[in-house]
Every structure is written in structure tokens, then in C-alpha cells.
Image 1 (spheres, rainbow, N blue to C red):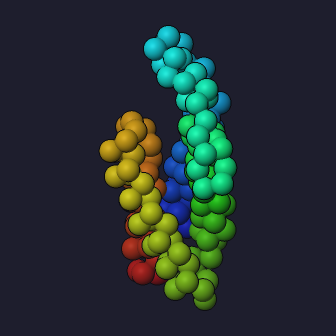
Image 2 (cartoon, rainbow, N blue to C red):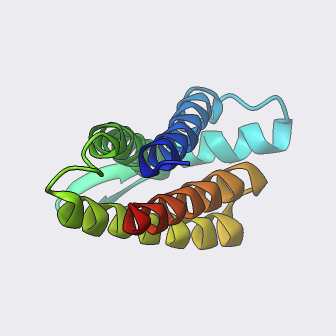
Length: 141
């Protein structure tokens, strides 16, 4: 397969992460379980000052969700653009950027393993693997 296809497959895995992040953002604060609902209510109810701002844990959680959403959206867009440039004269720069993204998603897979659940672990690993395959196949061509 061509490097372009490998990078686009990785972009699709990031798109799935982006969709999953969106679903989680929409549903996290209205769980069906009463114990989880009580925790969410406490996260929303208690605010504390930190570095000049007073926010609740729910605010921090929502803010982090938006940051992760934005990061995945940026990476998705970058991979689509870079996939078309992997065969160009700028191949070396494309490979360096794609390598950095592959490393980040490998690190994400470890973080997801430690703190989250299987689907983002698998999608982050697949992103990293397909980007690695794209880099490797670009060296042959």
C-alpha cells in the first residue's frame, strides 16, 4: 500500500476518536446510575479558586474535553493534508511531522490504557501503527 493510504487510514482512526470524544462530551454529565449522578452533581456543585479563576471540577473536565476534541480535529485535518504531500519534495518534513504525531498517539495509547477504556487505546495504537507503516513505506518509494 502507498504511504498516502496508510496516513489516511490513521486519519480515519483519529476521526473515530474525535467522534467518540464528541459522544463522551455530550453524555458524561447525565449518567443513568444514581451513584454516578451523585458524583457528577458534586463535581458541578463544588467550585474552588485556582490560579485566579474559580471553577468546578466539572468545568475543568469540560475544558479538557474541548481541548482533546480540538487536538484530535487538528490532527485529523493535518493528516489529510500531509497524506497528499508524502510523495512531494517536502517528504522529509512530512515524515518528521507524521513521526511526531505517531509518537504522540503511542503515548496517548498508554495514557488511555492507564486511565480510560479499550476503544481509545485501540484507536490510538492503530493511528500510531498506520502512521509508522506510512513512514516506512514512504522510504521505499
